[in-house]
Image (tube, rainbow, N blue to C red; front, side):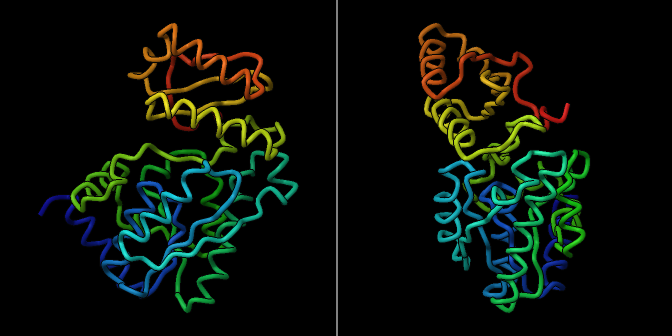
Length: 266
């Protein structure tokens, strides 16, 4: 038996012990794999919840609804109110904590209404090494992280998702749009819409891994290192600058280090 097979066996055991669960389902690779596995193991004892919020890219909600339908999962969509919280909108170092506290509180309420015993998130073992205040909120509210408990890394999850034929197996990592805004800069709906529009434009150009970091009226573009060359093409560069300026940015820059997770924490 391979190491991955042993971890997957542990995951199935953990899910059976939990008995029933509501998965905080963003639509990303990790939570999609967890929801699929929970449905396989627990049947109707598993469900997913996706938050509808301006902090998430507009297209992700539709993708999450479609995925849940494809795997036959019970799925609910609930509006979340992070932006109504002054501490979140002020964008302090506790932003992620406040956001996850709101999300998990909604999940706990809905889990009780559905008669489900636990709430679980899609954190994997690699997430333990980054600055993630949201995990504090999970611990406080008793949210389980079955992928972490089974020792599954991000690559393990991708490999397992691929073996199941899940379309999300190679989906680029997701993060809320607020993570593009430096701590201390207020988070507004208008700023989130501008960032979302610019990232969607880059996606339409064929770029897969995209972050538009906002520094005042300057946009700093991060893409995968292997995709940097595509933005240096004169015609593409001109189109990007035109779109970003039209979206309200005065300066448009390209980060030559490329995309890396947590770059705003540096």
